[in-house]
Length: 162
Image 1: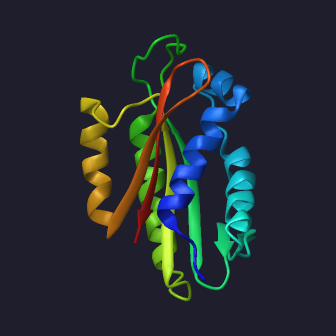
Image 2 (image 1 turned 120 degrees about the vertical axis):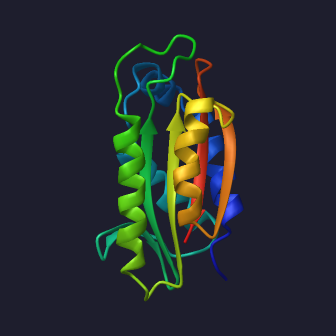
């Protein structure tokens, strides 16, 4: 039995949407990668699989065949009540690209992916579409799901498979 990527993306989006505190993080455009790592391990175990953090300098490994890097990608796009601050979306995209390069070096895991949460954002946002266009060639496939944080801000969970 192996990890189901579509189920993982759906489960992550639903878990984020259910957490009141993450709505506060989204409102402040604050990252929550530590929470995400714990939640991913929990969700993979719920699929009946083994999951461990920080093996081979990879955020989450589901033995024997999955390696997943995680990113929370906060944007500077204007949405609703989100505090208006400067956030380096271009740098966040570069970090996703760096995670792809890092995973390429871990060929012992036949399935490798980067799971990233983009917020506040909708997939159709013009600026995000331009950034996402830089990422899509790096992946053989992507899974995604839109969600809404508690408090109403939009977000998207992506899992790009190498």
